[in-house]
Amino acid sequence: MPISEQIAFVGGGKMAEAILRALLASPDLIGTPCQITVCEPVATRRQALAALGVTTTPDNRAALAADVLLLCVQPGVMPDMLGEIGGHLGARHLLVSIAAGVPLARIRALIHPEARLVRVMPNLLLTVRAGAAAIARGPNASDADIALVRAIFEAGGRVVELPESALDAVTGLSGSGPAFIFVLIEALADGGVKVGLPRDVALLLAAQTVLGSAQLLLETGEHPAVWKDRVATPGGTTIAGLAELEAGGLRSALIRAVEAATLRARDLSQGSR
Ligand SMILES: NC(=O)c1ccc[n+]([C@@H]2O[C@H](COP(=O)([O-])OP(=O)(O)OC[C@H]3O[C@@H](n4cnc5c(N)ncnc54)[C@H](OP(=O)(O)O)[C@@H]3O)[C@@H](O)[C@H]2O)c1
Image 1 (cartoon, protein in one colour):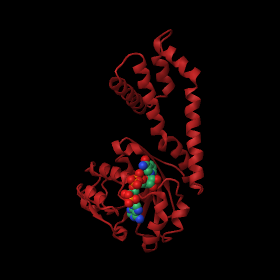
Image 2 (tube, helix red, strand yellow):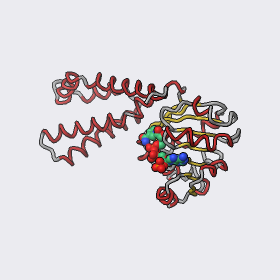
Image 3 (cartoon, protein in one colour):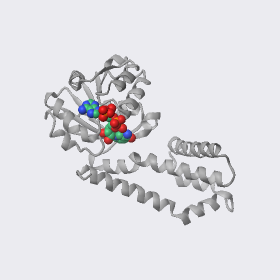
Image 4 (cartoon, helix red, strand yellow):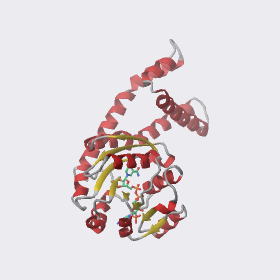
């Protein structure tokens, strides 16, 4: 679905750049970088992003000329930033916030009541176009708005639509999840080193094994337990390793990690720091 709307990023940090790069790498989606403006206070960041062919400016009010505003500032900056532009927004503006832990109601209170609003919880893996993002429909947002936001984030990976009440759980799973998987990969590589592999080889094999396992599940749509059972032959090497994972409580540790991260996200959304 080609995007004809003018897009503005407010905040040109890591996430904005990742979304921007994913969009620009999708020529079917974005006709020309000229339809994108980035509002960013830091001159060096503006220079880096301008090199991608987009327009940059330190003035957030320039975003008001766009149809779609992607709000990519840190959560603590949102009130001041919305104080600056929120009152000038109208029904023609679609606002898309990626700020973690900032509920739609808190944004709504700071903007023109007719503006259309969508909240997205993306993750770091957007930077390699293998992200997982959840989108939640906010006030005034239409089906066409949701389709547009979906298209933007699908340029950087997979997208699901959920009610806003599920976004803390998304934060606990796919938001914090990359860090859990990094620990898993590091531990697998340590195992490889323990049995005599060079560190760099062990890390490559561990990371590629995680990548391929995920790809296999996504491409076949089969349950992980089906593949686990296929790999574990009777009396073989894999079942010996799986028995150790069960004894070490890997499953329950991961379940509790997602739960703990979700509860922390809920605390942050409710205003505690
Ligand atoms: N990183 C992740 O994995 C991740 C995942 C999900 C959601 N998010 C959300 O994504 C948002 C951006 O995260 P990030 O990692 O990209 O942060 P970041 O790299 O710090 O980017 C934020 C950018 O906004 C600029 N900025 C500060 N005040 C501004 C203002 N008043 N108007 C316009 N721009 C302003 C910052 O400039 P300065 O350097 O001068 O402050 C910075 O360049 C956050 O709300 C975060 O919760 C991030």
